[in-house]
Image 1 (cartoon, rainbow, N blue to C red):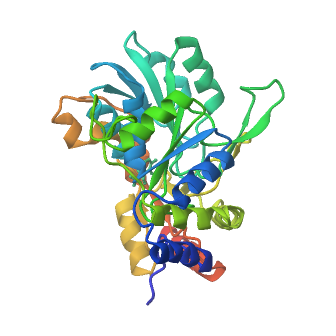
Image 2: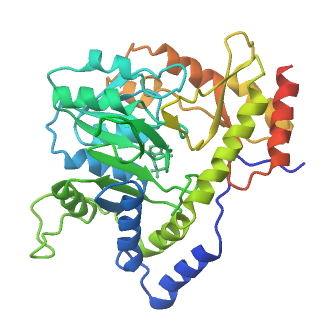
Image 3: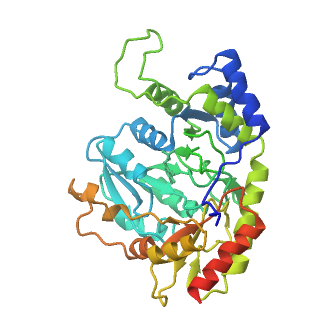
Length: 379
Ligand SMILES: Cc1ncc(COP(=O)(O)O)c(C=O)c1O
């Protein structure tokens, strides 16, 4: 039996053409035309002034926090239901992560719970859009403004996703994710909507922050004198070949998003009547891009996600478990972080959630097969 994979990248002729150009011309490291073009085009697509490409999404978050020049012990508020990269970026920069539970309908950070976590040491909020659905950014941005906090937006899973926002104008307008943060971060890992294999980017409208991130990604060489350093940076550079791939992908982002939205609609249509399942709610102010199609086993179901994954695997359907909350990670407990903290929504969805095959190559027959397998297991 052929297994239906969770994800497969879709690469075409244009990708081959651009990457071949790098090989043909010898521009294979982090200098070359594609880097600048990809940075400019991605920033423009997301409605930002500056883009700084880096080697992956984790590095993007790490330099974003570093660029804010925070003091040891300063606090950053972020969701517990996310990837380890988010907390790692905070901890590696000597700051203290302060967690917030997920919101039960969209699984994104519960914005109503953020205010209660603000302390005199809070300096920033990191908002993470989950599985293609955005965080409710308007109230979060108002709160950040009220308390003078920076916002780091993690839009790794939300390329092209939009929010109906009122924050800049009186009349609501659709704005893309990646346009909201003081600094907005992306991953272009192979399972993302736009991929560079490995890769990431930080976007901002602030020229000083952009310059600082350019320095940090390239070992903080002093502009006037290479090999002289006043600060420690990182080698987080993206290669021209990676950027070539990204630029080619970006040329057909509309087609990629349309494909993901088709998948989202079709799964929802077929799965919404299954009583044993909770689906990620789509808010009226959001246009999700369905990065991955997640499902959560409802409280009545006596199955957990691990058992469901095994049963689906027997039927040729590959899945991935949901994140495990950051407060449940041994690595942070060992550092004295989050000990005894409880976040019931994140704990529940971590145990009862998984995501289904969601790749761009998924056919309607395969999608139907996934839904039939689910109906069979859950009936
Ligand atoms: C929300 C989120 N942030 C950050 C990352 C890290 O990106 P990368 O794998 O490129 O380091 C990921 C990766 O999947 C992610 O899903």
